Image: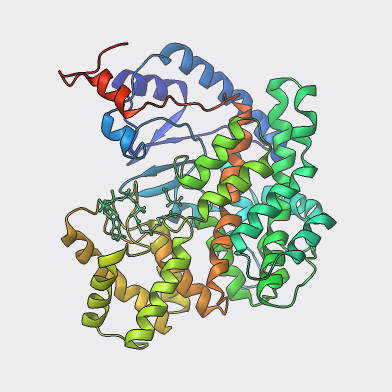
Amino acid sequence: MSLKLSRCARELFLKTSSIKGRQHGVHLVPHRSSSCNLKEAMAEQIKIHREKVIKFRKEHGKTKVGEATIGNIYGGMRGLPALLCETSYLDPNEGIRFRGHTIPETLCELPKPECDGGEQPYPEGLFWLLCTGCIPTKEQVEFVRDEWNCRGKLPKHIKTLLLNFPKNLHPMAQLSAALSAMNIKSQFSKKLNTVKKDKLWELMYEDCMDLLAAITSIAALIYTHSFKTPIDPKIDENLCWTENFCHNMGICEPEIIDFMRLYMILHSDHEGGNVSAHAVHLVGSALSDCYLSMSAGINGLAGPIHGLANQEVWRFIQELVKKHGKTPTDDQVKSFCQDALKTGVIPGYGHAVLRKTDPRFTAQKEFCEKHLKDDPNIKIVWQLFKIVPPLLESLGKVQNPWPNVDAHSGAILQAYCITEMNYYTVLFGVSRALGTMAWIIWARALLLPIERPKSYTTDKLIQMVGSSGTCKKK
Ligand SMILES: CC(=O)SCCNC(=O)CCNC(=O)[C@H](O)C(C)(C)COP(=O)(O)OP(=O)(O)OC[C@H]1O[C@@H](n2cnc3c(N)ncnc32)[C@H](O)[C@@H]1OP(=O)(O)O
Ligand SMILES: O=C([O-])CC(=O)C(=O)O
């Protein structure tokens, strides 16, 4: 969805926010805090940004940025400019920018491990960027790591809950339930009516930091309980968030941990309108705490045409290999895809907003070109990349025939011996918590109200449009 500001709105926007123009969209140059404490750095940003928003809304509260059509209403609000999200912006051709930074820029600019040969940046640094708009220093990344390490102990009842689930309960259902049950910890819901509205974000910040600290241990326990022998999650304060997560899953190889850092960054945020982010934001707007809101987001992410598509992609590749072997010919791949199209979609292809190859797909491909280029499943992913787009284009109805983020990840996880495909979307969910938690803190900081768009019945719309085809005012 591309938000077109009217000329004067854009000029004002440019004047009120010190802006550096970029090829697509705009890139704010934020105030850079010297504090290593994330909450203090956010408090500085929030003060500045609140003033900007108040001024902007006062001067342009009635400026139009688009119009709702009957097509928007029936079409899943596709293209309707209706939401605010400060943490990231999605350009249909360029892909996501995290606080103005493209994927390649983000991967290049964020602090990386200095030892163990790690090439991928710390997700802790991405969280700092999403929360503050600034690339963090090494010390600021360490602050986030230390905070998460000291907050990460799982409550006993969460372990009991997870260990009592049937092993075949889908891991996404387990994650959603465990997050909801974490709400016993929420300071936000306990103290909601005791603090001034403009301080609510501080309670939300504390809860979100606790959630992010615990979600990796929850996800690791889901993995070991469902598929291995349960490991009681432990936090080693000398390790980073991703290392602790992987170790608790029983994974210690540095190359896999490095890929996990990349995975956690790539899946974190995709502006505000995708199902999972929007669900978190919507539920949060009713002043539900972050645990209940994140649980709602996880339920949305578990849908097969949203986050679960990565599981579906792996199922698709497995069926292809079962039918045509490990090295299918291009003709075999094509006819397999044509058959699949008779009854469903090709998972991992298409997008509601993107119109080019997803840069998150490209980042994973580049990682594989370096580390996994001879893996037979990775080769099939690349073969599909060659064959599927023209096939989808030939249908004449698919808006975007190119691969999305989900087209690649399953084959990489398989190569790294994480073979349980039902688990894949849990990894996505852990990553998505980074973006949605950053935004839910900001949503409370900006005092955003309860979300409540207007709905209509078809008869009411017919009456409003009238015989002339133009909307009559009631
Ligand atoms: C993290 C993420 O959520 S990324 C997306 C992950 N999902 C997938 O990979 C599942 C496969 N892709 C899809 O189902 C779709 O492309 C979506 C859900 C992602 C986007 O949906 P839309 O915005 O409605 O796509 P679009 O406007 O292009 O759809 C037009 C038509 O093309 C079809 N189409 C779109 N993508 C595909 C595909 N990959 N394979 C076959 N047909 C497709 C749609 O089903 C629709 O058909 P219809 O008119 O007969 O109902
Ligand atoms: O933006 C979307 O609608 C889906 C998506 O790619 C994501 O949420 O990562």
